[in-house]
Length: 124
Image 1 (cartoon, rainbow, N blue to C red):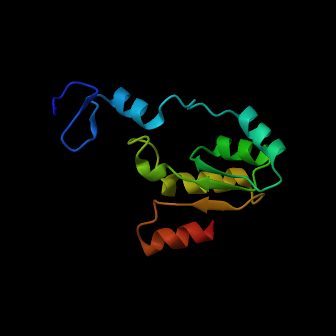
Image 2 (spheres, rainbow, N blue to C red):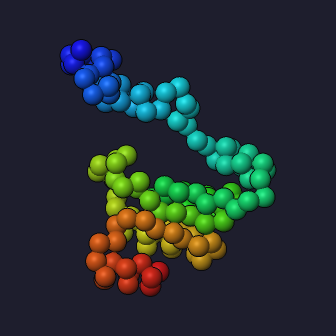
Image 3 (cartoon, helix red, strand yellow):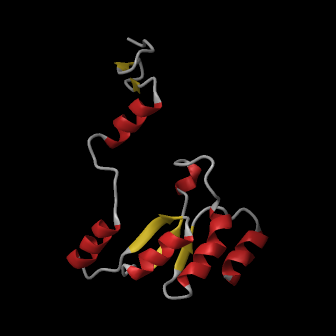
């Protein structure tokens, strides 16, 4: 039926989860959500392809990504869907660019809503 208890299936065929925890579980299943710098070290050893680390907002993480051999860092808050109150990419970009010191390219997505934002991003 279309009841509102967690786990029931509604008329649309979609599960009515009833909780944030249920929604996360439905999306991720049994996957391990953890990712460590050791995992990145393993990935570097497993391929000769360049690795671009996406989802960086904090400058210390960008510096660590470079230290761990990333070919580029990608400033992204994934559209703000993960942390509603997290910093915007426009606010994080200058700090990440400063932490990287030109050692690798810095890519940004989102947070650019006006031409002046684009000019500021290019200036970094």
